[in-house]
Length: 423
Image (cartoon, rainbow, N blue to C red; front, side, top):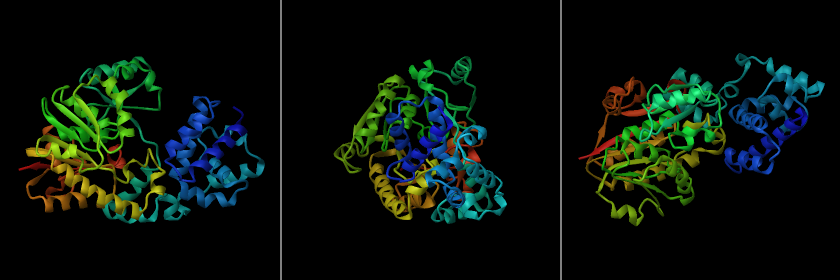
């Protein structure tokens, strides 16, 4: 495609995404459906440019007024994903000089907000948790996330899948913490691979895999994934149960559960039972009260731990939306806890970086429910033979009470988890 045409299309897409009417991935997908003329390379340029603009929006907002043309075009030029000579062939002389001047700006000369590219309401809580390490996090959140796969241990072994991927020209390394994970470079067409088609692998961040591992579901047990969504953790849990017992995948969105169906078919699991519920107090929940061995509550949250993948979330969330979320999280956790039988395990998790969605919810639950004894996550992980378990944890006595994963420390999405055992 001609460079000028591709740059114009990129500017059009940037303009649509920056309206923030819908999640960025939905806007990009719809744009591609409406414009079938783009090949894989063009789609890659369009998508990666949009995500670069979202990741560095405050910096680009600062630089763009000195340029010419529409704001969408200026933002697209600043974030353009591709060779500089290709981009410059689409620019006039004025734009080329402007871009060179922007490229010459030193990071040291920028204000903090133009370096971290985060909304101010997020900065305080993150600096309070991380101190000087905040800047490592900020830098990591402006980078794309790696692509992690989970090997379906029901039907495959990690070394064999790794070797199979190598034969297909895809280099993979074993994830350092999850015993099921493989990390690959780039974005190959996985859905055409035999390993994917037959259900030997699923796309799943290593941190998400660790949440399923923490539940430690056993053969023959009754288990509930309370906020199952599209079922990534559900499938991992079902495999650890070796396709025995009964695993309920609950969610209030039938649409999200529909996305589980093709994945479930590929997985060869028959112990998973998806069920849409009206709310956390649904009659299905009441009927199972006190009968479940293990319950995972991966609660709806701000999603700010996934900013490498979903950078628009930092501009679409607010302190008000987070406050609404925390009320919902507390209610969901309390309702889900009723399912757990005596001696059973409860896991609360989010993909948020904010303490009000994480430690605050866990500590309030512990205070209100003395029949649930908090467990040390590091001890659980060590029992599961996860290397460096203590490095993955923070909080509580000894600093190992909770799972606390950070993109800049662990190369995973940002995740939190707390575990209780019902007395």
